[in-house]
Length: 74
Image 1 (cartoon, rainbow, N blue to C red):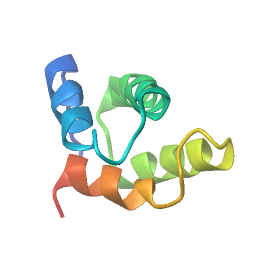
Image 2: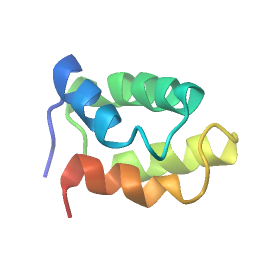
Image 3: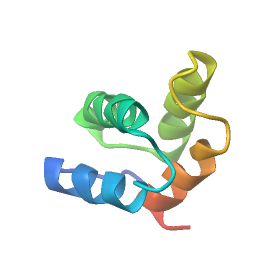
Image 4: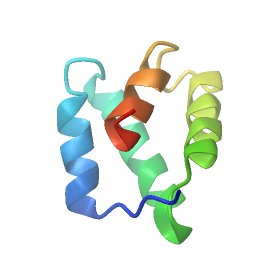
């Protein structure tokens, strides 16, 4: 199922993750979410983007699951 995210929803998600992500990581995730939301955000697409951020050392390995849960609430 596709998830449509507004700027306000992205900010709310990042607020939920404020204890897990530092300022730089929050910026990286925010830019990724803005890019990925153009056609709707799918769970598989989000997972791939998060793995890409992790591979580029832009987020830590434990943050992937927390970000997915904050967005899709599962």
